[in-house]
Image 1 (cartoon, one colour):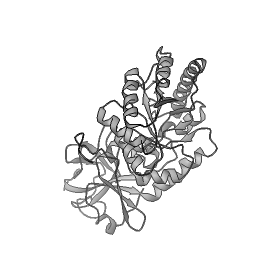
Image 2 (cartoon, rainbow, N blue to C red; image 1 turned 30 degrees about the vertical axis):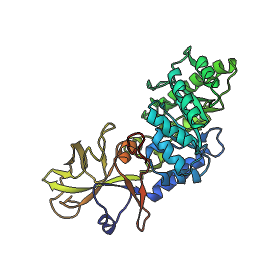
Image 3 (cartoon, one colour; image 1 turned 90 degrees about the vertical axis):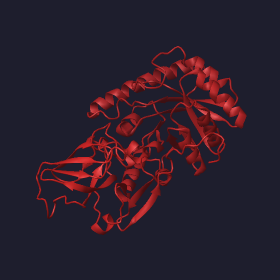
Image 4 (cartoon, one colour; image 1 turned 135 degrees about the vertical axis):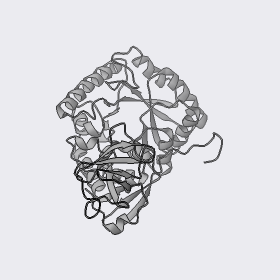
Length: 373
């Protein structure tokens, strides 16, 4: 757990997000070291923190194939920041997003994901109009039940053929993200689901090979399965992202990474067995549960717009050491890192002696089309 002296806490406006820079660096080095000598490379995912300063640290640690992101805007931010190999691990069909994708493709090697012929027929004219080349992966649904072609879908080979017919597009391989596995509590269950996904991928690769299509890239995986997915033999790259900062949900799994992200909040009300903090749904999300409070005997029970309700099972005194007095600042671990970071415009990185400010520069900035950014 991060230790912030009172003088450091006094500098912080609350609620805010603080990164333990030392812990984040150790997480980055541990993950990079694992991929040394693996057949699969790491392709760190930008969506987890949307911070180019952190992403640069990940690439600097080595063993990376490039970077992954989830939106056209994130790709454009990365391209403008000098990242040279970018995968948008998602389908892109909105015209404004397609224009952003094309601009990014003019600055970096860019790949995007499809699972339907209509997406290809939107990508190709966009690439032609902007005079750029775009790599394409076909997404498989290996169990997450979200996007992607199901097992044995008859449209797989025709979709690859359609991509190959366009001079501005290149068929590069497959994406197969086992999102249904990454948060399973049992490592054995995660391993089983990853093996099933690998067999699915290999079956579809064989169908494509029989039609004359190679798959130089097979991308997938996440923080909860990063090692299992790398070692299952089907992937060439793993899109882990949350390992850098971690969160309350991933913190319950048997992973070799430390908590590095904290929300700092202030006690604004106090009664004998409860307290209220100045942080709520506008600063943290609850789809993975309540934030984890770093105070013994204290538990967040509910969030409303601007408040967190805290149960004090240990019933500390109303005043004195450990009392959670009004005005005290406390640390919470967000339950889900990705949406939590997206609610803030900057991170305060604690180096052990002071703070650095890291902009969350990948957050979406909305403009009307045709308006200069």
